Length: 219
Image 1 (cartoon, rainbow, N blue to C red):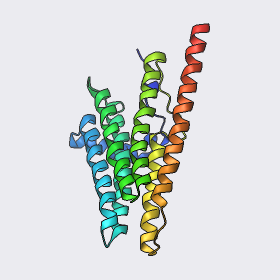
Image 2 (tube, rainbow, N blue to C red):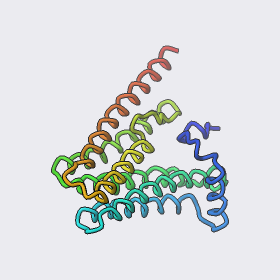
Image 3 (cartoon, one colour):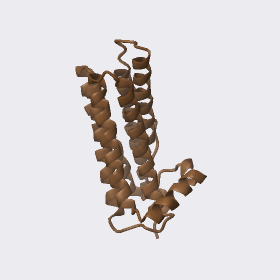
């Protein structure tokens, strides 16, 4: 039997009382892991839409706050679908598909709009690059799992790290709007950091996979 823990991202929040409370509540509501995964797409779409609206609104701070909330709710859904599947005993034959494919859609719905919200050609390019890089980090992880049986969730810019970085970026944009500070390209620099971290993450995961395959061949 495959090791279930090897395919799950290690999250301390998974064992907290509040996570248990919400997972039990979702079970009572009859929600399935696949449904929660799809709800994550809705949260990501709300986040991306809010980010796109922010530069064109007289109340940009509210849209940046909504974007940050949507990003965190996306992560919440990503955690809860796993809790319902494993701890809740609702793992299904299509669970892996609903675990991976919506994640890639979520990244696109969040990272690309943030690039456009940055308002410059560079930020737009970096938003698209971050989306492509997010897919690449997941591809290397999945490829490694197919070859070694274990998923490598290392960072410094794995999914939770990316979402933390862009949440901070959204809250920073909210803050400068409230303070009426203009011409600070915070989202541009946020995306620079995300992309740099993604490059390092891809390199580290590839290096780890290379070492594991080399060690397997030697043994």
